[in-house]
Image (cartoon, rainbow, N blue to C red; front, side):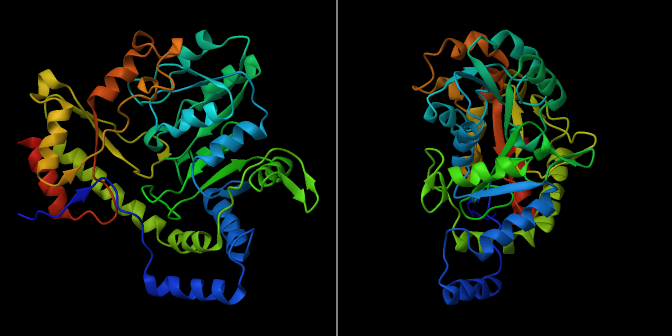
Length: 369
């Protein structure tokens, strides 16, 4: 039996021979950053592929979150989820704002709209939900609350590249959506990210903020930051985009096999596809109920690790457990029972376009046995 290291993800790597001409063009043009040819071309291509009107590229996936809060002039408190990667809440902290955690829904891992109203105070100005694992939040319920209470909505859509709901891009929801193009994502630019907005005025404001706040050579409109994507990563993204549909199809096949082979195992559960949703199969989380399964999540995690299979406990610990946030009243475990349970039970299995059938069989056999 193979002892090859198996990880949760493998980056979508375009063929080297196809990437070389892009590098040659960059070398010849001597334009390697600051809104170059490939940067502009990638923004146009992504807007068309994703079905969105305006998209701004960034150098990573965290800076779009920080900039979104600045662009919307968010103050005071931001309601968010503890069940995410820590960058979601870090972006709130970096803006001098206070995160307020609310619990999540057991069936999706997403923010529970029923918990939002009670968390709103006179200082609340925004809601920052996460489309966890690329599964859509209850955007209609969240939008209704936001409109009723005069709040902005920023969706952390780091996992939701290409996801649609009833044929409509999920990135069109809320006031702004953010994307991550990190190498671990379904679509990547090595490192990178983006902001999606709905009008040209906001697009200009975002582009100013990601370039130190410069509107022109002598005008600074705000305290922006340097978060521009360079030409090499933009070119890489253009080439990766050619292969993304094929990669998603391969991931879908792997997800379907997991479900078929793991169905009926006592104490093990997973999410099914949602009706009307085009999923991108970013992750395949399973949840382990220790008494019924016979092993704890961590025991299964270590069992796989001993065989060179490296799952990830996304998302454990909860963000609310980390030192910068654990003292917040909203971080109390009693306030977040569902999130606490999911974090204690979750294990994301390897799923990527290069995962072989034999390697997947190894994973399934160990989980069954």
